[in-house]
Amino acid sequence: MAGDWLAARRTEVAADRILDAAGELFAQKEAATVGMHEIASAAGCSRATLYRYFENRDALYTAYVHRESYRLYREMTEQINAVTDPRDRLIEGMLASLRNVRQSPALASWFATTQRPIGAEMAEQSQVIRALTEAFVISLGPDEPDLVAHRARWLVRVMTSLFLFPGHDEDDERSMLEEFVVPIVLPGAREATG
Image 1 (cartoon, rainbow, N blue to C red):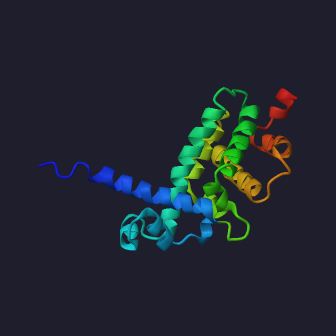
Image 2: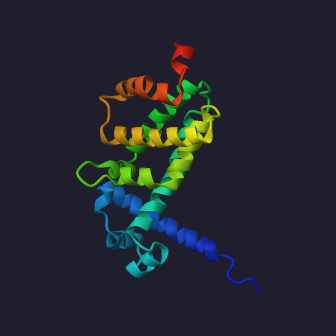
Image 3: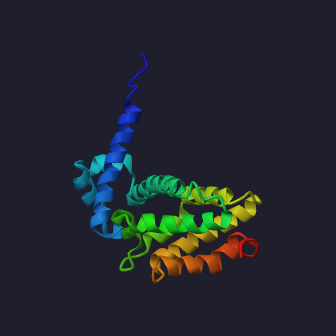
């Protein structure tokens, strides 16, 4: 007997349902203020059931951020798919990512300034965000692994900064990226396109 071949799928569906409920709450109030009891209630399960899937709030936050990071990365790469120039790809990818997070009330709440910046903490600690950012840096052109990792870490910090302290508008942020990010991530790009 093969056992319960649907068990893994049921677990995945239940976890997604909990994360969906958490996302709805994050859209209504700052993510740092949402408690496990609220998430359980919104998901229609007991706290005991919730803790079966996520051992604590940090584990739930991590799962939510990782799921959304993959989704945002797919959206961003689709939006800039036709952009082949590395300089333009860097700027447009960063602007698309900023726009996509800001347009999502559930994700924007992670960067609320009235609570501790859990979005910034997650961005710094997440292996998934690091790997996705490194993949983006590699898409700009191959480079030494240490440089890719260093530049990716720096891009995460720049993005976090712009979420917490946005420019006046997208043109202002574009200008900052052109002046301060392009020369670091793509040395020589200014001369090549300027």
